[in-house]
Length: 392
Image (cartoon, rainbow, N blue to C red):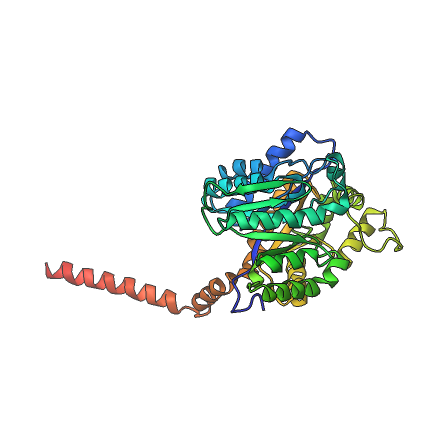
């Protein structure tokens, strides 16, 4: 079953850190990011979440708010979220004010994603102890949620002060808010406590995949405990994927950057059991390893459908699937991958294919019935005209 009747159809989008190979013109890379969001908007994708990073030379967007402001002027329908703002890096009053301004500028297409900051190299350059990032995120998030509700906030911590702080504008819309989560339940717990959405950013990594249902349960329990609803439609899951017309073509496309991205990530985030054997260095073997482990799809639209169905079966249902926005392939092949997905995979899960096929079968399955009816009407019209002509 593609989606359950009690849920909205599955949504699709991108989680765009972004991850660009070094050695490419960074100005061009940033403008291509904007072009990609335009491309997704035209193809009917629902969401784009934009990252914040300040080091490592790959994830080049320093301010998701600035990027979203630019992207909003180039798009019409797609919702644009901070994916995510690193809360320990910002005064919560100033960040909340910027988010509300974006909500107005985009007329409600803004989404707010919150996290502690993925790159500890970013935190180090600001003198922030990595052990302080999550506690600071929770302190900041609490203040921001109160400000969004229109409260006047006085709060003093060891890293920020709010004195009778109140936003000068109320939000334009009831914009989506999501907390990032990976393997630990800390993100799920926070999302439940405040009644926000959950953004599982490593959903297809084997270790994270195994605890998806556990983190969902934590989210639900905390939401109920604090009097909130946590609908599955507010649960977003991210995973890497590149598709082409054939598996061979997808593998050829991803020679460009697949192993580069995986190597980069191994220096950024824990990649499973450190005692396990390293992934294969041979490219073809590496792709097989990546596909067979379920951590990504390098293949065809049919394989993409199977992967998303596998996640649905594991979770019992969720709201949105997000591509990892990384340079697995070059820009042209990347855009084509999103096109194929929009053409063949998205409608499978939104339920749009079945009624079109049923209508086609109704006509084409009737043999010559409709042709005979048309021919009969034409012959009758000719005969009637001849009768009128003879009468004149």
